[in-house]
Length: 147
Ligand SMILES: [Zn+2]
Image 1: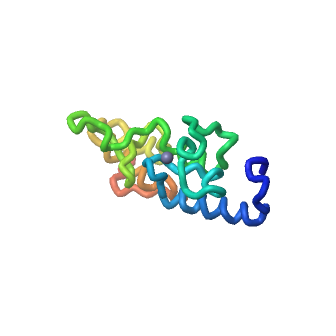
Image 2: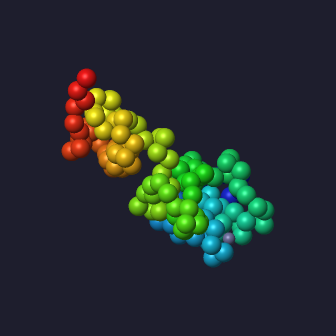
Image 3: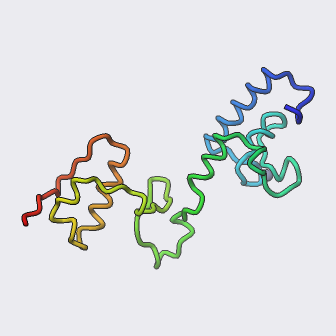
């Protein structure tokens, strides 16, 4: 709380929650950058650069929830940044590229005839990605392998 010696702590906490909610709503600084939640709590919604004049917040100066949101997009390309001739693979609903290596393969897939079929690979990956948060995996293309 050393950056805000005059604020009373309860108000500050309220302001941090407000700034975090704004951040999660995708509210940006007037310059277009993500807002800096901790700083925005005391001076209004602005990014780290506009508030401090320095380039990037070190993690200690941002709260976890805000850092995590940025991390989940780190290293992932947005579909708008990719040369349309080179678009391949999968993108989530926000337009971010999906790393298919991170999509778990359910054990049932290992017994399916489509598992060895490269032509089915894309469909299989999409089915898995769609259900990645579901408890039970279901696949209508499943056909048991015969040995
Ligand atoms: Zn800014």
